[in-house]
Image (cartoon, rainbow, N blue to C red; front, top):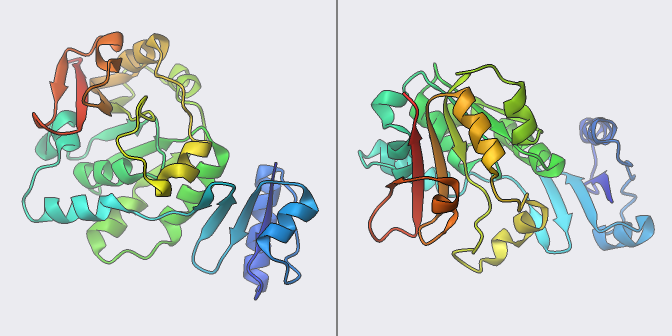
Length: 262
């Protein structure tokens, strides 16, 4: 179970924001009253607390804190602005092809890949990000709006992402044929590349289900040009799902499976 509260030095705006989120998620709002987060967890008998801060939302989980930050998207965008290529964008067709296209990111997570996808399609393109977990969707949706980036390109890319809290299979079934130019899957890796403690909060909440053949078949119907699937380079998921075209550097730890449709 989850509850929501604010920082100790609460303002009317922060309190109203917390109460609105509580209403939207149908969770209890707890007045902070100078209590520590651990005390609130004990008092409310919960293990997860959303804390509304001045500049962000923070999820306090048993495995640590989780909040939005563009992370590696900033580094990747800097490289792109310097003329480098990005393996994910190349798998999607390259920046020239992607201009003004629409991309459906079925597994949004922290939105790092979605930000780069958004940069790739440009301001006249569009990225829709699906996130099945309501708490991750909340944190990322709010973060994309409130985080203050260091450059215009990053801000523009973040602004051009629409976050939807929905399972990708049910969403795909609702879409018409050829609704999106590119559909992207980045499920949690069957075997993590690193044992990074910073990812523990995400792993606790993330959807660990493998992509099904049913979902892939729906994606083939809904995508106009191609489907891109990200996985550990040594993963057997590529062969299980029938990806025969694999992109990425020879020694890169991450590869991208591609299905061309037109």
